[in-house]
Image 1 (tube, one colour):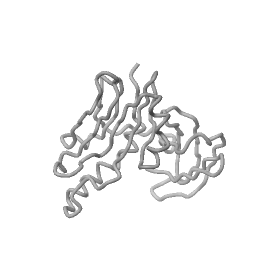
Image 2: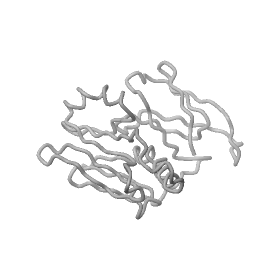
Image 3: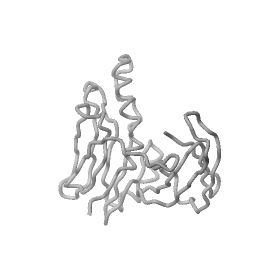
Length: 203
């Protein structure tokens, strides 16, 4: 169940949603739009709701629908990825079971580096579905604008002098001539937005 979002000046306009929570890049709730009505059914119902606020510091917001027709939406079954060393968790789709692996490239001294989530079926190609990178805050502030210009990368959390980001590869990560592997990779990659909003820093 998705939403269309428009950012117009300092307003966020949401289309075709039911109950929406708006989060910033640290996954902190910054707004909520409750949409009422009595004629919701199987077919899509177009409407517009507006949330006022100062969104100038955000290049993007994350949307999560928690309820439809006053009924809470049960969380989809998931696999909890718990990185004790780096101190964070993610909820991965249960459908990923047996289909992914994790490869770390970490600097043990500085506790910075990258954690790649891999589509194991595409072993002969890039295979990366998404990457969590842990930066020193000073390095992130110096390189954030350049990194954003290169490809999809978002800040998803911060703790002390460390910044956590999520990025998706810009190159083709599967055999373009293998339709089956391409479809499998696409089916896994479509969940990256949901995984992003599940990010939690451990206390």
